Image (cartoon, rainbow, N blue to C red; front, side, top):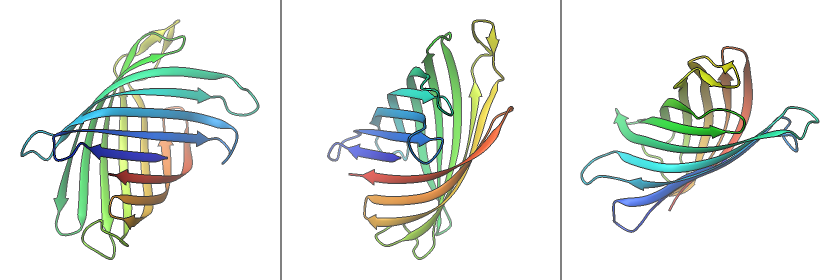
Length: 199
């Protein structure tokens, strides 16, 4: 996974995005390819960032099947950080999605993510800092009927994550972690390797 943020000079506008490849088997059996980018705005004298963005998602089937489902998605989000004490870096993210999924009716989803980054050998995420990264995100569907006589639960899923990170350089971090994803029907774990880039 690659996450990036870019501010345009000293202004209040920028871009952010993430590109993720998820596999069923650490390799060629694609679970999902997600390409997401958005325009950001940070109000003057406010520790909050608003984003308006678009994502294209291709989801594959487990095993030998080459079947896939395409999704186009618009999203709006608010992201605001806070610091608790000298080491606990907390970020709240609220996201609202409008989803156009192949062979389904238009649907929406609400997401809330609570991130914690805890530097272990420093008090900031600076060069050569080792840190612990944790988050929990809950997904709530906006409606139950999704077309074709199919219904879904309001509770879509929960993602819990723990990782160890390292600051390679100011503005460049890497994380290796484990995410446990749970729905009302199943639960599974995934190893995740991610790069986080601010420039």
